Each structure stands twice: as C-alpha cells, then as structure tokens.
Amino acid sequence: MRRSVPTDAEGSARTRLPFALQGSIVLGILAVALIGVAWLLVNLELMPQAFYTAAPIAATAFGALWFLMALLQRRARGIIFAAAWLGAALSLLLAAQGVAQVGDTLIGLILIAVGVALVLRGLLMADVALDK
Image (cartoon, rainbow, N blue to C red; front, side):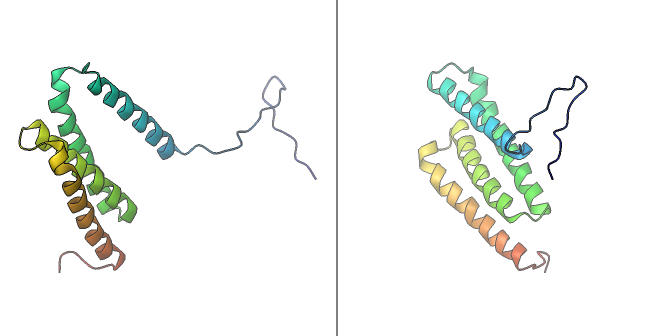
C-alpha cells in the first residue's frame, strides 16, 4: 500500500529532501566557512588592526563558555572539543598580548587543555563528585 504524496494548496506535489538537516551541523559548516574567510583576509593583511586584539578575546570567551556549558551538561565529547578550542584561543591571546608567538605555544596549550578535559571526562564518566 503506497501513501499519497502530500500536496500544497495549488495541488503540486512537494518533494522531500533525501537527507535531514541538523542545526548544529549547518552551524558548524558556516563557522568553518567564516573562519576560512577570516584566515584568508588575515593572510592578505586586509583586516583592521582592532581585529587582532578583539578576535582572540572573543575566541577565548566563546571557548570558556562552550567548555562551561559542556561541563554543566555533562557532555564528554563537547568538553574535549571545547578544551581544544580554548587551548588554541589562549595561544592566540598570548600572541596578541606579545607574550609569546603562536608557534611556540599552540601545540602545548592544546595538549594541556585536552589533557585536563580528558581527566574531567574520566571523572564525569565515573560519576565521581568533584566536591569530595
């Protein structure tokens, strides 16, 4: 038994997409595209000088908020990704402040942040209270 295809007011058949769109995936694709455009503009030196001080602060705030939300929601994968983002953002922030170059701190800060996230993930998966 076949179902009839739903029609709209004019009587033409509506076709469904062969896939489902997920909001988080679409936002992720848009974010990657925006980061790519920003990276291109930075490499072409077309960004205003204020961008180089504001972007690392915004990226660090976003990473800290993402990490905190993932921690409060007890999402283990989100904690690890947010920690990697936060490590990279902190490296950019140190470079913007003139403390160290990005190449000197990027890998180290990402590895430290992901290591801390793995420890927290282990505590969350073991269902251990953090206040003991």
